[in-house]
Amino acid sequence: MRQYDYIIAGSGLAGLYTAYYAAAYGRVALLTKSGITESNSYFAQGGIAAVTDEDDAPALHFEDTITAGRGLCDYPAVEILVNEGPQQIHELIEAGMHFDMEDGNLALGLEGGHHRKRIVHAGGDATGRMVTSFMISKVINNPNIDIFENHSIIGILQENNQCYGVRTWNLVTLSEELYTASNTFLTLGGASAIYKRTTNPHTTIGDGLALAYNAGCEISDMEFIQFHPSAICTDSEEAFLISEAVRGEGAHLLNQNGERFMPAIHPLAELAPRDIVAQSINAQMRKYNQDFVWLALEHLNPQMIKHRFPTIYNKCRELGIDMCKRIPIAPAAHYMVGGVRTDLNGQTNIKHLYICGELASSGIMGANRLASNSLLECLVFGKRAIEASQESLNKNIPPPFSLKFHCNQQNNLAYIELKKKIAKIMTAYAGIIRNTELLQKGLDKLQALEKEIPKETDEYYSQISGNLITVARLIITSALNRKESRGGHFREDFPNSNDDYLYHTVQQKGKEIITIPINKNDMTSVIK
Image (cartoon, rainbow, N blue to C red; front, side):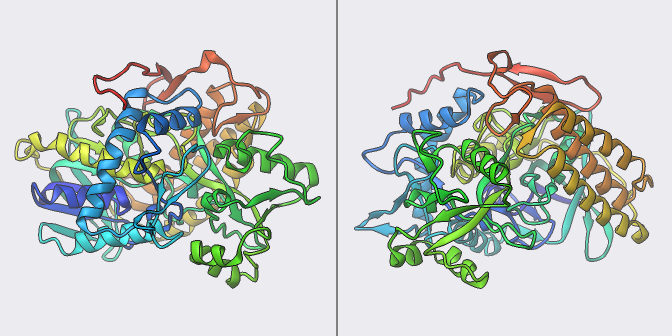
């Protein structure tokens, strides 16, 4: 067993930032499934939503977040996000992070659901890459942080509802390794790559979700999967993201007749919250029996487009698309709105186990994440979690744990085939448009698949195959339970929102699904 003060599993912004912050208090093991740059954070284009302009205010950011969340946001969590967010941006800048500037001030972008320009960005449309690269430089040069790439987390070391670390599978040596610590942080990202068409890296399949569920954590609001409205549509399955900031700069959505359709649907038109835009695009695709709609930029300044969106422009050019004219786009699975339920400091119902980033369900996102709130959540709640966990240092002494996992390479092909089959099931039966019949068929197909997967005890591929089934079932079960349409969950058999469903859906292993009321209590801090 390798002993540390902190274990951080995951190398997105939440993992990097918590590792960097934790290193001031003790020795840190940073574990990542693939390379340190393979994360949703790294590929994020838009930016970070935070109040930095004198014409803006946390109260306005709060209102936009609550509105986008469709009545399911917990007010205290959102208050923390919008009030502590500006300070986190300031601390990043003080540490040496360079955001884009304009006339001596931070250049601010506008994205869907925001009523003010408040999106700080870097490298035009390369914010995720710039911020995570900046944090990687901080982490790899810190003597208190040991980085272990190609280490997949396969279990949580626990006893008496207390976490002592993690079991990992070394993907290079094909062997199990144990890591123990006073505090363990899972920052393993979401699950959108469990769908066939996704903007996420292929590794983002809900590993952390299955781990936490199997350990006994509460899993909340899994019916809400956010489909990003605009990903390039090509003959391949690749779904390269077109940032919402492109629409923020004035791009229009056109149907097959060349007509704008969003102004008639929402007052913010193309900048309506993502769930509305994605569902509207889907409706146009069904209406005209087409695989895409057009994102039109032909009325905008070409030089502005090339300067503001160099990454997207070059990608379009690679694909033979002129970004300055029109781009064929369609929605793609993008963000897991629900996740592992935590308190306001990232703590789960298992002592010394913390969750940060997309994997967490802290109450911020509600039924639909407001654009660019995700990177801010990584910063604000990552810092809070580290601060809350300090009192446990050197007090959480692990009992002895033994190695137990092995690997049967013959199960590898079965796992790869299972992943493809589940991606098809999730896309066909639990996608943007859902109904009882589709969801039940999807659940039935999962149960049939479960009988086919390898079931060797404590075997690596059997374990991760079971994880895929677990994640898919959590999403579909939650979606069946919510008989209404709200945010990222649209039921064509229940197309309207229903106030009887103003609650969080919570699943826990071995227990019946339960509901928890929304927390609308004011905090002692006042929104200014």
